[in-house]
Length: 493
Image 1 (cartoon, helix red, strand yellow):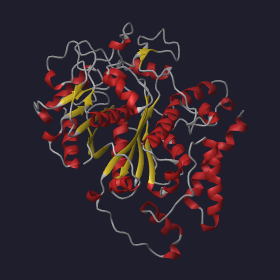
Image 2 (image 1 turned 90 degrees about the vertical axis):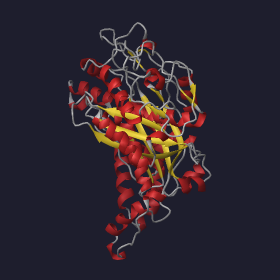
Image 3 (image 1 turned 90 degrees about the horizontal axis):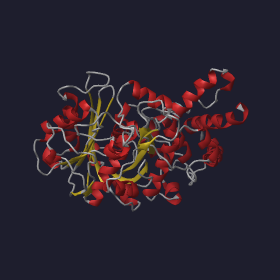
Image 4 (image 1 turned 45 degrees about the vertical axis):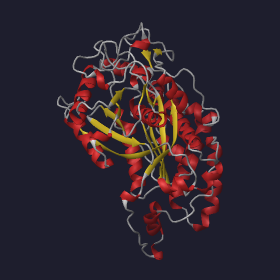
């Protein structure tokens, strides 16, 4: 079986090499080669003819490959003059695979938590998750490729292409894009766990039984890489893996590429598919998961006294970030403006939050400074709140110290309904924050039946959706290792 599947991998590697090193005399060969790659991936849109000009991200490469042309003078783009806007959203979640369907279900307080059906987990103390029951890659990923991929890649590519559709980037517009200024930065906390786990099982028999794709399809970077190959996008392309803060790290870094003048369009977010035996078993071993198996919809309950751990989820959330003038020039609908954000590290413990919340407070303060807003401007926070004993309280204490008792502030946790999507959590929660800006509604906190006494419930959204004219929205994501991230969105004006 190894022979038929090896050539596509070689094709991808050759395509990557050609994109960096082909000379002028090989441009026609490269164009034909990219066409074959597009057919391999089953893209709904074939990439255009490639690079249309001397984008900044290609200048250093041009000097390196063609020293006889002499040095190219460049001017550093003024970061403050390049505004970043959100023009597209794509999701794959337990509550739907369309941004509007997803958010409408959140507004209605519908839980996506249920019994796990993907495998027999009857011997596990936790048997529930935010599992995606219905999902198809039809029209988004070629069937042969989809069959070989880990689900995290399937979710990533599907959500990425849906985000492009949502952004109104048609085949015609795609052909007009300057590919050297378009990039992909979609990360994953866990990567291709199923592919790697299957490879280990095959190795127990013989290395000859191993899938030749097991290494590339297990790495966290390959989802972004394959999507970029499919689209022909030659700008910034990599992945970040910072546990459950992954999506926010990717979104802020993608925005910074645009702010610095290195890109005009970026696909960014996160994807994870950890609901497999080794994923469930690993978090059970950490004693981090809820065991409320008899009532799955009530299991994820941030800030409630009776919470007993988080609930695993799976899926992907991807944004299209675009430089403002670029978006306006193509007549794009602008959903929100990305203001800025920050990263910090607790430097304290692998899994526990800092007892004084120092890293979180510093992160939020830095994010406000980077965004050019004050704490009084924030009136909506999509909290990280995962339904763990320590995490929920320490985050809320940090929010209270940063924002005080602002009566206009509304706080909620998307995870009360989706569970915790790990590296993809920040992606779908960014979509939730943007949808709150668009609709003027913030979703409820379900299962908040008996709030912690140290939590000011007047700041929390209740059991029903609430009207909120969002001025500035803050979205937090924190991860194992003490990784903290905060990003901010606002209505475009």
